[in-house]
Image (cartoon, rainbow, N blue to C red; front, side, top):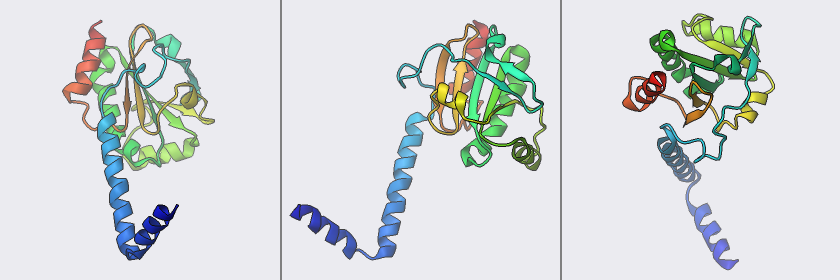
Length: 192
């Protein structure tokens, strides 16, 4: 106990501004290490997630119900996001690029919005130059699907094969859809 008291006294002897800088640097380093450790497709089993895609039935922005079960035979990207999440905002263009590049080849990107109202989402889209139809945006108002899929924060992206198997999970923002890591996995699944 005396050792903890000495450490506490030492910590408090550092000027407050220096402590704040040390804490900020420590948290930044932890975030960087955490982000770089997860910025790739990972096996769902490695993350303790199911290999079969859980149910996903939500309404889109137009109020039309979308069911992932009806998308069997297509490769599906399920991305959990929110307009207040800066990495999600930055990633949104990458997701629209994926849909534009691979939609005609059998890819469907489902952008599952976490607990936001339609006006907020539309404001985000218009403010960033996206049309309401650039992606299939689904409304997870109560975060039910987010919890069912056991997403790991925002953004989290799941890659689902034509047979409904979760082939990969990307925790954090996808920053370059043209990278071998991203398009190689998607193109491989589209060929199956």
